[in-house]
Length: 460
Ligand SMILES: Cc1cc2nc3c(=O)[nH]c(=O)nc-3n(C[C@H](O)[C@H](O)[C@H](O)COP(=O)(O)OP(=O)(O)OC[C@H]3O[C@@H](n4cnc5c(N)ncnc54)[C@H](O)[C@@H]3O)c2cc1C
Image (cartoon, rainbow, N blue to C red; front, side):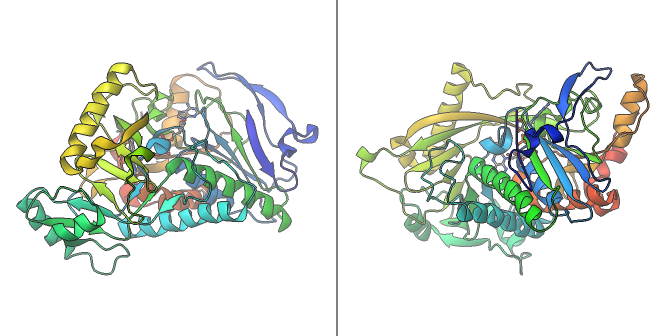
């Protein structure tokens, strides 16, 4: 199924003049018909972005920003399940630029600013289009924000932790998000019912945000579509963005004459035959629970109640709804979003019992649903666990050579993966950099630190 807009006509993807069906096959047996955009001008630049999570949507948006009348950009966004169906849609949506020990993350300030800018793009897209009534089936009243700017608190557990945090905090001058301490009494004012653990100290990030991830991604997708349509009015008639709901079985069987293909498949990236066993990624499965506060309770959260980070996290959405997460099963090979009865009961028991230690009122909340997602965890480096990016032509070519696939002109292949637990802080900043690298075919644009994995991985 394909949903898309062109500059001149939302349905132009289906116009006979633009339909171009063909069949391709490759050694791994991937054969499908495809509808590629007709390519009336040699200057049109065509890109495939695989995966519609934080990574893929950010890359799609930033690729579109490179369109111009002389060289319009067309983006095909592939996802087997639609927008935000992977880890991104399940995530807690919490964003701040600090490590669990209170250190500023590598490029945390840059990541923060870029993410906040991209949130504004999504917010504007919703605000400008009054025709949007329900973006996500999340049953959120449309007037509710997709980004909540209410801060995050993190109660301290031990005196050592407090010392370590305080030392790290001294290095943070001049960054856009404050990390400060407040007293237990102040914290209890913000979060009535909170248990204060150690030494009456609570860490507070007043500018930190939490988002509704599915709704954010839907809004960003809407922004991409609107941008493509408006580009047409500005004279870039061939600018297009299309969502193709299909399973991508292998890179070499992708249809269409793309200039570049960006792989943003999250934890499922290792299932591509060309990349299987080539990327230093492990997986971590997590369950989150959506809860609401029943009207009968007569209670309501404060409008400005911050989210809470502790052994579990509570991402507060509105005055009667929160997301509680997350369990962590490292090395899990279960990639499906289906949750068994057993898994559900174990997860709920763990989440509620841990949360009740820090926030006892959770016991009066009702669970409405559970969701599962899998993070793609990158290896630790001396500056933390960093995403994996880079051009992967060599890896793909080596695979194809080994499997005696026919030589032919292929697009350049790029990877944007291994976002681990840091999807939000890195998606916008890196999505922009990757789009620049893809358009200019220049890998040097990408930070050296994030390409190190290529030199440690055997690509033979
Ligand atoms: C429980 C949980 C809570 C989290 N909480 C937070 C948080 O609060 N803050 C934060 O910053 N990060 C959080 N994270 C991490 C964050 O969700 C990830 O870093 C981020 O979602 C990764 O984005 P992605 O686009 O790389 O992958 P995904 O979001 O997984 O996107 C990959 C997409 O590719 C599609 N796909 C995969 N294979 C194929 C194929 N073969 N063909 C077609 N389509 C395919 C999938 O359907 C999916 O939509 C959390 C993660 C989990 C699991």
